[in-house]
Length: 212
Picture 1 (cartoon, helix red, strand yellow):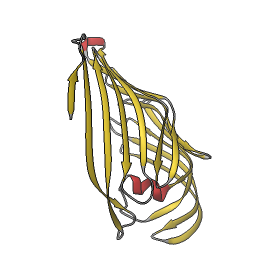
Picture 2 (tube, helix red, strand yellow; picture 1 turned 90 degrees about the horizontal axis):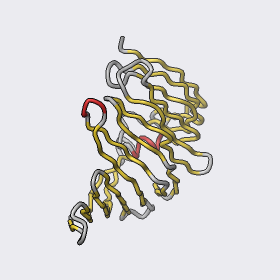
Picture 3 (cartoon, rainbow, N blue to C red; picture 1 turned 180 degrees about the vertical axis):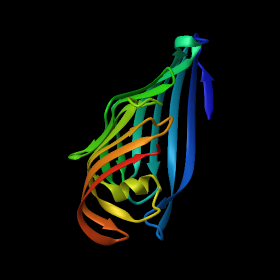
Picture 4 (cartoon, rainbow, N blue to C red; picture 1 turned 60 degrees about the horizontal axis):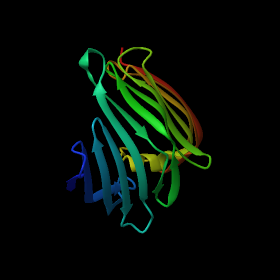
């Protein structure tokens, strides 16, 4: 990490960083590959804002890289609470050789709640988007929309494979009261669904979970 204060402006600080991060990626419960990701960051801190750029690439034979720009704002809200905002600019990431576009979006806090607007990635007809509010009230709801998303790859990216699931998912997942007693509603159509590598056909999942 390299930190530099710009001449002529005592309130501006520039930070540059380089990191090589080893990772272990689960392809299945029994198949694991090892890789490393090279990450470069550039940040400019000025008054109550931070402008950031992050680039990364993988040493794997299959291309994994990205380039993201985002701005962070920090200030005081009502009752002198510290509030923040993140403005994510359009960008491109590549995962397992597939190029995904990231839409411009905003994430911000307000009186103990967190709001997400237009957070989305897409690749042709494949799209994953998140909108809504994380809070403790019934009307604080977060909606995740999936269109032609490979759930096997999604679980691989999350490094979460307690069971082997595969298929192409389209539909919605809604979660409310996340910071209190979460309530979950789902409606998903999964084409070519596989469970533990066994082909199950096309499936419709309608679910509801409420701790109360």
